[in-house]
Structures are given as structure tokens and as C-alpha cells.
Image (cartoon, rainbow, N blue to C red):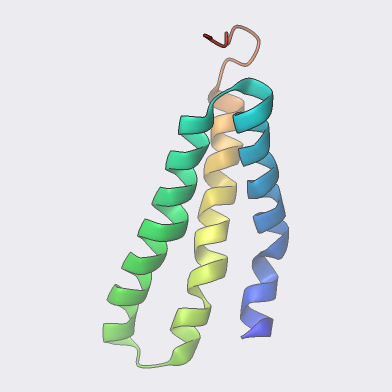
Length: 92
């Protein structure tokens, strides 16, 4: 398990960092919450439920973590470059 999951730890750190920047620095807490819940909870559970039917191996469960972390890594990078950070205003 450690060999499988450890591949995604740098992506986990990046996702937590970007989530923190979106929540605290920019004020977009809803966006980071949706990205993290959708990918880390929804996609991970969907992956495990779907893939375990085709491959009866515990490594499928272990690979759910790096796969979902990689997806959140890509989504956060995409979101970072697509968002207009300069003109974003926090409404209080």
C-alpha cells in the first residue's frame, strides 16, 4: 500500500495548498470544497465500486488514492490558469 499511495503525496500537498489559497487568500471556499469533495470522495468511491468488479485485487483500492489525487492536481492547475485572479473581488 505504501508504494502505491506514496506516489501521490506531492499531489496531495499541492491540492491542500491550492485549496488553502482558494479558501483563505482569495475567498473562493465553495470552489475548492466542490473540487475536493467531488474528486476525493465521489470519484474515489466510484473508482473503487466500479474497478473492484473487474479486478478482484486489493491494489485497486490502493490505486484509488493516487488516481484521485492526480485528478485533483490537474483540476487545480487548470482552475488556477483559467481563473481571472486579478479582477476577482471578495464580497463581504
